Image (tube, rainbow, N blue to C red; front, side, top):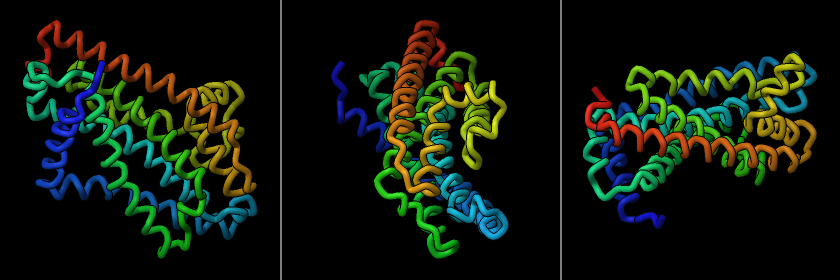
Length: 265
């Protein structure tokens, strides 16, 4: 299947017009990352003065909060871009347009990337003068971590969108619930070894656990764990493939049932 760049760009342009016309949407994208970096920044400052482990890398909590927001925003960017179509009763029109389902997925992922950049970059820049910590000091591994977490966010967002297609708007709260359910297993603020043994196996089956362990290895030990990066990439590809497959399957089912005409009601 050959994607039409023009149609993908057209749908992205529609969402950009929506963002441009609502400063509240832009504010919401930047609000939570800013709140997170302020809250965890002060927590990190406290622990850096009272914990020898965190004193080795005073910004480890700030980095964790910012990178966690990359995955959260990646998930929310996909889910909200799709929900925007439902709330505006636009799915029926899209289903009879030349736009292919694969092109819709591509446009949603592009919009998720844009939303994530708008949301996280201001918080990352604010951390520099406020806490004298730069996330960009991670160097090239930051790009890898960012990409891996974005992919997992996309997979989660597509799975949520598929469930909304199947069960209706009553399932839209999953956009927030599913990603936070992963949080305790991701090891954002603590090593995976803190978890009970049986729960560690579950955590290692999720890409974020590998990413955040890799982040701490870079910041505290100065070691780049390529094995963790490769493990996270392999898992991301599995989850992203499943997410795309679930979405396309749910889209096809909703179209066959005629549900796309009233799924937003």
